[in-house]
Image 1 (cartoon, rainbow, N blue to C red):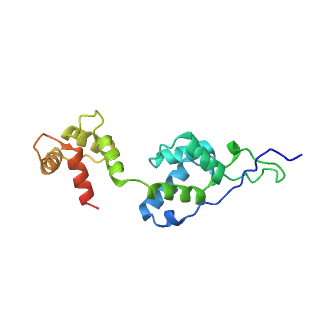
Image 2: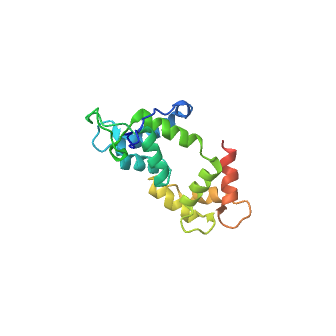
Image 3: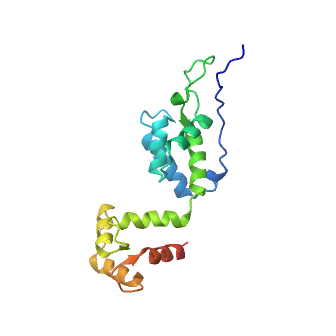
Length: 178
């Protein structure tokens, strides 16, 4: 009688996309991995892997991350060779996380990323970044910009004189920097 149990085959994802990332992006991936590798064994559990993806700005649905686990999760080193390892116990090493993150980062839509950044400033959803928003973010990141500089920034980029930088102005400004 043939076994109906499905064998889960681990595959190593390609690293081409990761290799094309900037040094800063590569560092961010490594730092996120180190931060969530709670027992510092060089491996991430499924939950730790999901935290790394969130830290890198990816809110993937569980079915998509579970698929990554099925395809790329490895058996723990102490798992018996003659036994199948259920997906929930599989782990991700740094090269695998780098490869997956590299692919996800390279697939990002730059305009959508900028829209997400805009929303980080415009937390109350008023449709523009005001002096108060800049002041708040400046303090949150520990870089207290003088009020005169904040006023000058808003005035310079507020094309219509409404007292703040709207999303279209923000996108134009940020896309011109690339």
